[in-house]
Amino acid sequence: MMWGGNAVAGRLAADEWNSFTLTFVRWLVTIALLLPFTYRHLVNDWPLLKPKLITLLCMGAFGMGLFNLTMYTALRYTTAVNVSIEQSVMPVLIILANFLLFKQRAGVLQLIGVAVSIIGVVVTSTNGQPLGFFSGALNKGDAIMLIACTFYAGYTISLRWRPQIHWLSFLFVIGCGATAVCFPLSLWEINSKGFDVPSTTGWLLLAYVVIFPTIVSQLAFARGVELIGGNRAGLFINLVPVFGSLLAVLLIGESFKVYHAVGMALVLGGIFLAEKSAVR
Image (cartoon, helix red, strand yellow):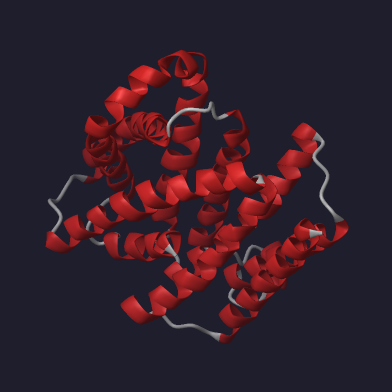
């Protein structure tokens, strides 16, 4: 639900913030807020953190920094409904990477479920004309969002290398990675496009993305991967379209069309099949 709200907030923030600057400020504020509560844990966790520090910083750079950079950029060209539904492409990338890199097998029913979900994503991103995917009918924003999904899928895979450290230490370090990768891009963006001080609405949107999609949901997702594994946890990303689409319609008045309903039905049907397979 919080990630669905992140897509809506990003759409609203398009008129208030430049994409790179929003992502940089988001993570800078996050690590500043966390530091007073994290310092003691960082000291205690340092023996485990030190050998994995570069890995964790790269995880933050790709999964937190580049994913959000590209998502906020995509929201300048497509709708929050589309972006919400398209995030369900992540599970197939996760399962494929687990198979290619770690020989982790997926059941037939699970693969069928993922395929059904992907068809739903294609239906959504081509405005109900799935064959248009092969003829260049993909919207610019939708294409950018699909690239964004590869960054977060990579982050999910990399959680297997997360050291057993306190959750505050983990979030702080990956936040530092995200801040570091966003800083030079934000400077370039400000230099090329300028910077206008956001309105009160802009600052409230920043507060939302810092507290909920950034801190609370990331910790919940990391814990979920730890409990049930990347393949199964990744499938729950497909619930983002439900909440994201609902919030986009209710809060910003985006239209929900027949092809959105078809795409969402395929996505949720795919979740059902894949989860049924995983439970067995």
